[in-house]
Length: 111
Image (cartoon, rainbow, N blue to C red; front, side, top):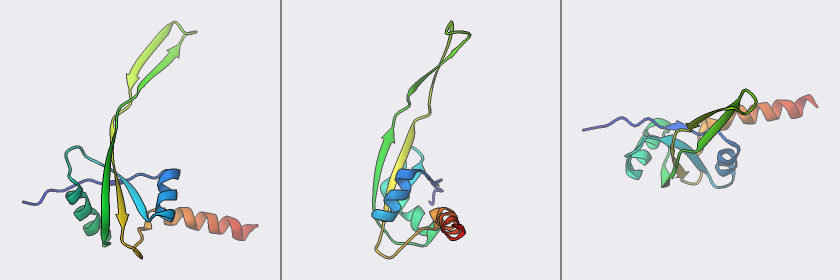
């Protein structure tokens, strides 16, 4: 039985720095998915060799919004996130941040 895993790249400044320095990419994954399943999904979708997978869970945070001069307080929570840090073998790269690199090159050329 083959199960489909939805992995979504997480595009942040920290994720960009990790991809440049340590060849590690960050993905948002579903709850209950194992490291082996994540490694297989990344290898199949992007055609790269995975070296290691680390998983972390970011719990939800409480948020408050004030309206009408501070008299009405709306309370809520952010959604919890489960992240996978996938390290690729030496020499493999993902084209996730390709648009960011092209933008920075074009800005340098314009100056």
